Image: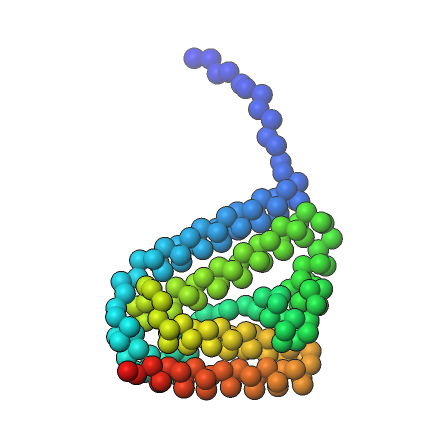
Length: 192
């Protein structure tokens, strides 16, 4: 038996190509996760508005916050502008990404960050809908969720401002606390 040796070129990717490939894979994974969360929202077996409202009353603000404790609703650029008067170039994640020297890697990292934040928002909706068995509009639940998103934004901004601006940190903590109270009031007012 004769063995034939085939001259194969093994292409070794450069470090930049490896990084871009890894970023592409991560981007695709995050997009797939978004689809999973969207599908889970559509798969929720809904209950009546009265049952959703009763669940809101039962949970109250503390219960809603417990359900959502591992979720986050990252502030978008408009919220940063409205709340902190922060320009696009002042966003901490953007500043960190801008330190990447290679423009292709920097661009890929920026897009990955954006889709990951959007995935987090979709996941939060999915968790909320699954917990309350919501598969259609419910005015009270929608308001409670909206107030939770505001709470999350203030909470995340407060954490981000630690060590940067004590005054802004305290202000964001106060706003987050106020939103907790609003969540409780609206959750408990869902009766009847």
